[in-house]
Length: 435
Image 1 (tube, rainbow, N blue to C red):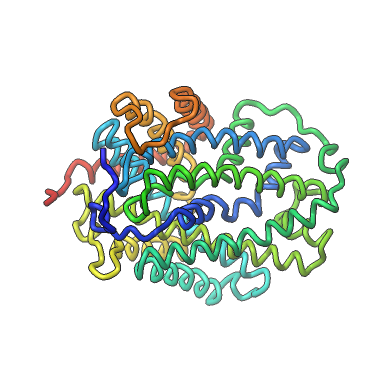
Image 2 (cartoon, rainbow, N blue to C red):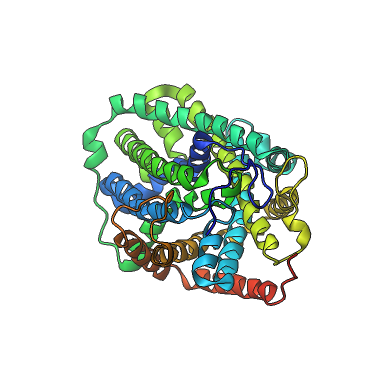
């Protein structure tokens, strides 16, 4: 187990340049993305007038997982996140597989978000929908964010803070204005959907949980945070409270102002047009673009740290573990992820990888919840670590929840993950010697 270092650099040579509020901004950016702009319609189609309660319940449920990550993060002050926790608790093979599968998810996420950005921009710049305009938006966004992240983690974190305000302001306006126009009969009096079978219920749960996904990436860059053993738990807990309240408020306004919510492809913009006119609808569209950019920036900042950690442990080319001597960032890993994401986004072949995202996340959730039980038994609550409310009951409940969600995944998703883990095992089987 690692302890806080007084040096401004982490033991891995990375610069500790990200403060408490920037860490909170990164955590919000990692979670609040395009999902909040699409969730209201999909949730209402599945749960009808119970959607608000479903969103709140999902937030409380994810809160159990967030508490596990906060506890695990309080034991360490170096890079790694879920992969580090799995490695320390269950050995190097488990750590490798978690890091490997999550990194694949990051590539798919970056590619998917770049395409989502092009689609959002096309709302007010139609040329972005296809051809050269689409290529310009996809390539321009990925290359810009990669360049910012290579040039220094402080600049990337500051950009993240700016994008947090850019994405939250339209949502807050939507809620604050929309609450005065909510038709409470429409909000809670719509048709009740028929009984869901267990697989449909599982899909509804995965949908709601997906909107909160991304928090698991925050601790992977702990080596570049000030006092991560205290600041990571703070950021995670504050984030889940803020995001849950925001999501539930957005859901309430959307289903209370937009008849036919379930059929809308742009629910927030359509609802905003109902009570605020086209000007507010345009602001929500711009907010969607900024929201996607913010999540893309968090993905570009945090994703390559998984690859850097794996390479530093001896898996893959040594070059990928390189830290830039001037900027103290994993520059090669960032550039490599950018190149792969760009190729996938332009070719469209990222779709199958995107299907892996929730299942690979569930693998990280399962191993982290189990790791907390092991680490607590091994280390207890040493000075400086964060005390977990509820003790072992929280990771046990989180573990049971994640296993239940995994069982609801389709066979195709599980097979795809198994294939990805098999490929990763080949890399693990033939490591290089670490200096």
